[in-house]
Image 1 (cartoon, helix red, strand yellow):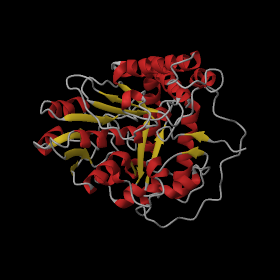
Image 2 (tube, rainbow, N blue to C red; image 1 turned 45 degrees about the vertical axis):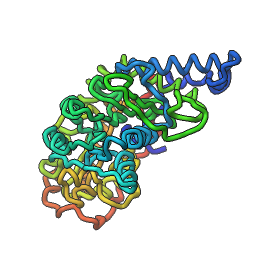
Image 3 (cartoon, rainbow, N blue to C red; image 1 turned 45 degrees about the horizontal axis):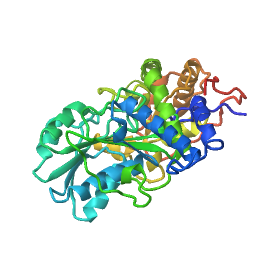
Image 4 (cartoon, rainbow, N blue to C red; image 1 turned 180 degrees about the vertical axis):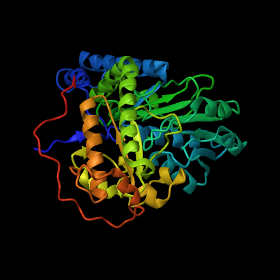
Length: 424
């Protein structure tokens, strides 16, 4: 069996076994509906949901009453953006966001545009950052909401949330952040925001569960529900609560709260080691997107200027990688994030995202470095075993294009060895 290593943690994470252990009883033994208030089965489920609500709130520095459970980030984003647009329609119909936001934010905004709202899509600099002054200049008397993501899912670039939020909130405008990629990887707090969205499957909890933070005071945020029926989540989100998933989300964030600092240091060191090795091999043939900005500690967006990403992916089948956002894969268009950062369509199509996580090992990183090195050598028309073949030959190759080079017949040696076992 061929060795296969996972380097796509920004797409999704495996459920940590400690999280699964907390969840299992709520599938079988404690299966009650938390809305069933007349018997112990419902009471037990409701207590578990409340504990999870407190764990999520603890991670964010929020009041548990400000946490609403959802099916994931996309639902949370739509609930927040569309809920604000309807609740504050009497004040204005202008929303501000960034060109590099996740498609869930951009598509929700476009849906509102079709209903008559006006949306400003802010540009970003070459590192992918929003300029606080440009944001402030875009605000009007009719602006009701600004939505800027905490960390970009493709590049890992962190936005200056505090500086952006300060300019928005002093004008009495609500500030929202999609923190899906940031929570559990870097410190995240609701101190400066009015709405915040996160998703379980990015933090070693299961898919199908997420949370929405809605500020209760200074100011008290009003939302019109996206889903009606049942009155769950204090009337904001109708539908039977996913008790096992909610328990898993709470458990995952409780783990992240204690383990995130050490995990971030470890992953940052490995990311930097991998990037340094590839930069040494490829020189100016490699561009690390966002390397001049503060980034997530485990994300690398790598543009191979003279090697098509598809060719590399074909020769790196033992590494689970991504050419962009998993949520936008198959769209057939270059990354809107990279083109907004000034990359050409050819450069965007020659970009690979590599993201590490809790169960990545140092051996995995070393193996990935060697595999990238071998693929780059193959692209240069050299045998990886040829000592005289220098990686500098890559710099003499033509610029990346849609043309596919001849596939190398050399495959990585098959092995039954699996990634190093972890506490998962």
